[in-house]
Image (cartoon, rainbow, N blue to C red; front, side, top):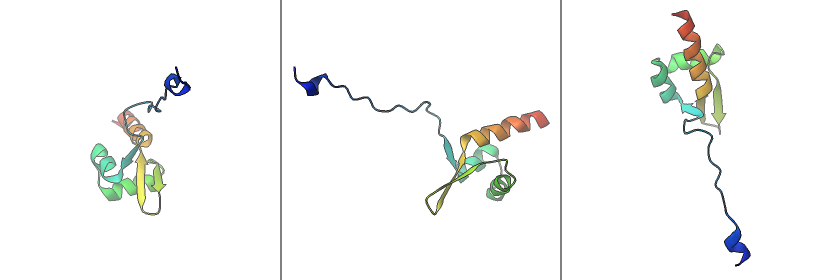
Length: 75
């Protein structure tokens, strides 16, 4: 048996199948609000925006879910 045949390569598995980041459009749809409301919520600190490169932005899934949970308490 050769050394190469005894090595097993394991690919890194993501911890969950849910995304960590949402595109702005997806965050709009999940929250049922407009693009300008998404950016207002970011400016108010209620949503977390991550810049990816110079032109791309994403909203963290955790901040979307946290906003939903906080909003449940207001209803």
